[in-house]
Amino acid sequence: MNIPAVVRALSGALVLGMGGCSSLAAGSSAGDLGLVQDAMRQVESSYVVPVGPDKLVNGALKGMLSKLDPHSDYMTETEYRELMATTSGQFGGIGIEVSVEEGVPQVVSAIEGTPAGAAGIEPGDRIVKADGVAIVGMDIGEVVRRLRGPPGSRVVLTIARTNRPPFDVPLTRAIIRVQSVKSMLKPGRIGYVRISTFDETTPTELRRAIARMRQQAGGAFAGFVLDLRNDAGGLLDAAVDVASEFLDSGTVVTTRGRDSSENRIYDAPPNGDLIRGTPMVVLVNGASASAAEIVAGALQDDRRATVLGTHSFGKGSVQSIIPLDGRGALRLTTALYYTPSGQSIQGHGITPDQIVAVPKEQQVANAVVTYESDLFGSLKATGALAPRARPSTSPNAAGGVTGEADHPINPKVIGTPQDAQLNAAVAWLGSHRTAAR
Image 1: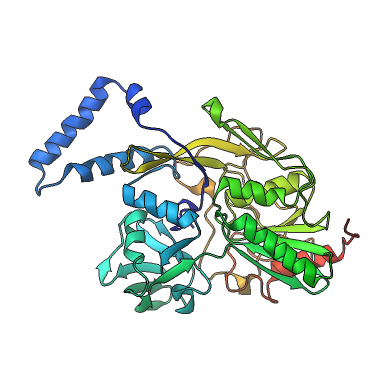
Image 2 (image 1 turned 135 degrees about the horizontal axis):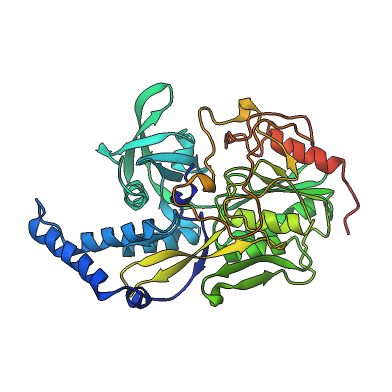
């Protein structure tokens, strides 16, 4: 799974910044810039068909940023507006997360309650056409534009799925309101919250969910599960706020960059723990990335929670959004983030305290997790951590479940009574109960 290409553009811990391109030009020689201009003139005058300067400039910028790392990119003005819409938690479309794998758009997940979810689109489905037009080979921005559209408009996707011929799925677009927090009170007064992404509304949604479940539990929880599986990340500030809701004090995360202005320490406010010391488990897997890893790492380092599941994705970089004089924006990697103990997650991920693999019957068939360290051009961590050793088949110290750790869980299983990893978390809480403060 190519986390950085998620359509909702929430895979990076985003920091909104201001700036321009003057510093880039200042670091380049006149000869370098002249070479680019000469190449553009040659293309404009000699290419077999006419091509406008905007197309060339956009292509040059995207090519330049793509050489840096998998998460840096140039966004056109349209793509920039789309990013701002997605981080607000509402946009128009069909309700899927998609990545581009070797030029082929591939479904990461279909959001529950959306047209795509209702139509039965599955993780791993490859989208080869939209309204009869081949979209293989298009960049992620163009794929997004073809999938989104006004509510009520229709789009027909041609899907290639393993072990069956390509087939068409007609969909009617709708307003997609991303509910980032889902919750339920499990038997035994165990609170369960699943966060699917970190956007502007997530902290507020979390506080409401906890208050509602506490009332259902008669005023206090016996245990609490925070489910960050398949959470590709989102806004850095939202991650800090979420972690702070379970901490009474201390550092949540630090960021360090080339520019000293990127060196920051994010602390939790005093007495912020909403569940008052209740025993807690955080669930992670190979699709838990970036902002999700910030939260898991903070709660693990503080010994506030036991992390359970499989190795997380390992995206420990911060992307700043830098507008460019009204002509789009850069999504530029400007810092790496570190857990409170000073460990970089970049390329390493979060190692669970309890390895609980996904049973074969609950895996996505014919799918294998791709980690940050597998991505071409991925940044290397600066820190003392040794390279991550991936678990393969691991015994479960929390309940006896075994399986292929590098195979993703079927999203339809998450949160259900059959969810083996969630059941292992509940079992762990049952054996570590203490009275809540």
